[in-house]
Length: 398
Ligand code: C5P
Image 1: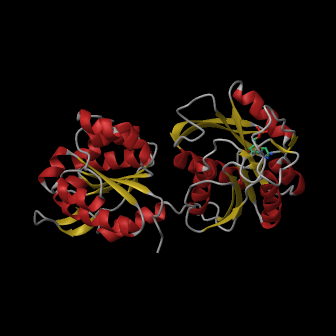
Image 2: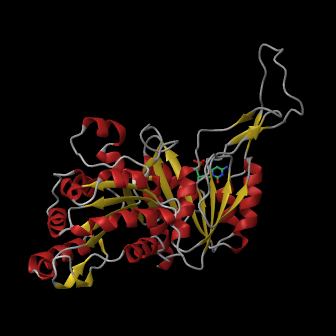
Image 3: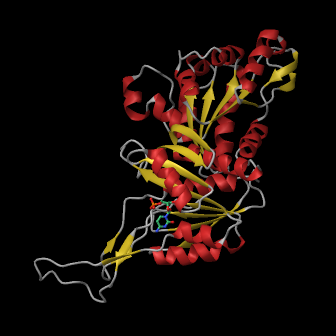
């Protein structure tokens, strides 16, 4: 059974009789490991009580776009960015029409417009409404916008009609949710990813390091697993839980990471260097804790091995992706690195900003290859990771 662990899902409930099944959907998504938050339209509250969904999801139910208190907690933009998937179930004919027209008149509409996440709708309506050309056109438009459509089913409807328009059963919907995270683009490929910072010992208790959280590398690992790859993370010291189905090789110093990367890449297809490797390390590591007696001490540093360059040099068939953290002239500096380190692609980002990058959940980046430069606007690291994995898959398929 496919897992949804590490997945964050917003279940959007609109006002139809099938809304009673949404509670079951929330439960089944959680059973598969997903974290779920619920957003309801005002008319959905006529069909199912928010309290039920709050108790099930473990989160307050979000309903009001103009509630200052709710916005102070998790506002609609944060919610939109939080999610890996927005699942609207049930989606009424009216709500589908409002999506098509890009209306932002309810919290759920605003989230639909703002989210970079995948979007799925499970339509539920009377068979006559479903077969109306207006609804057919609307569904077509949503499909063209890459919205996934689950169902609907046929059968006896709540109104007594028989025909197409019933919302699919919760289990069927949840299976499709799980499937949509398994893209299979990298199935059969082995991906090695360096992640997090390195620590360069000064003495037994002190070290040189940096603020890298490892989130980008771990998100890339999760996205590569989703795409069907066999994934090894060579991880510096981080406080993150690795995604399911990854092999994690811990490495503390750059030298350890270097050795682990060269060993892991022997049978790999793709190497992604997202670690923030310390550039220098102390020449001598004191065996005992350095005492605080002298007014000043000198620390002599030597250069660490460049891991990504070494991997690119040793494995010419490997598709090698590096990262470039820049503060100015991003594309120029990143291109220089692409050539100098013999990379196939580089992901460049602006580290002068505080709202993205180091220690943030969001990132904005440029995907740069020898003959292209594609911008990825600000989005969650989870989503950016998927976009990078997608770009890698397309590039190696060329
Ligand atoms: O040279 P710079 O540190 O800016 O290059 C960044 C890229 O090189 C990243 O992909 C990083 O993981 C990789 N790198 C490395 N080994 C080093 C330094 C950087 O693999 N010693």
